[in-house]
Amino acid sequence: MRSFWCHLAVLGVAASVAACRASPPPAFLPDITSHVMTSQASKRAYQISVALPDGYSADHAPYPVLYAADANSEFGTVVETARALSFSKQIPDLVIVGIGYARSGQGFRASGPLRSIDLTPTEDSAWATAFAKESIDQGVPPPEGTGGAAAFLAFIRDELAASIERSYNVSRDRAWFGHSFGGLFGVYLLFNGSDVFHRFIIGSPSLWWDKRAMLKAEDARAASGKPLNARVFLSVGVLEQQMAPTYPMVTDLQAFVEQLQQHRYSGLELETKIFEDENHLSVVPATVSRGLRFIYAPSEREAPVKETSR
Image (cartoon, rainbow, N blue to C red; front, side, top):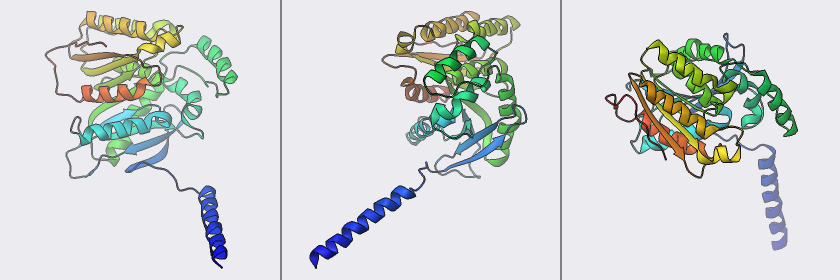
């Protein structure tokens, strides 16, 4: 009889395991909502995720907002890092808005084909052709185009930010986080969307894009004589250039910082960090943590350009 009941118990456990495998509960982070938003400007559908701070309240003073690119792959890192820093009183409570793509697949498999359009400021057909072949060889969906940054900025400024500000108790204190192409778009925003964003975390920006197009854009901005009222954290990993010498991530960032220093923009606060022992992907968590603490630190406007490294 004892063996009979043991046998039933084993069957029950097996059935429970099978049921769990058949219909696992969805995984989630707390206090996050997600919806699809189709842009009039870019004609693309975006998966918009919104993370609220602990104790979010409509009666609280309006919360600052952090917008994050590549939410398909990096939203969880950004949200939980910000929540940890907020819990330890190193940054204020934030509403975090992740911009991803409403496509199946994990990370860059979902976002790769479209991020190359939205996050690049100019068309570069030579890169698109070469990278398409490389993507196919690696079993990754190829890019679907380039040079859509202006339309993406219009979506964020005229559609997304307006929607967020109607729906949540937030201020117009907006920050941008982007890595790689998202960092390249951050540089584009710095010169073309500084009326929309005033805080920037720009990680491993692809400044090599289109023969250093954004370094030329910086020269043009400097020639205009306009101030640049922004707080900017720039970073890169030492191993990025060592592992992929054809993409001079470190030297391009250093050249960009040197230009910014030489032009001494009124209103610009800048910090740079070159992370030892980090590559293009492993550098992301460090960039988020250090970047958040810098852009939300007490202001140092008396020093127009602050630069540190290593």
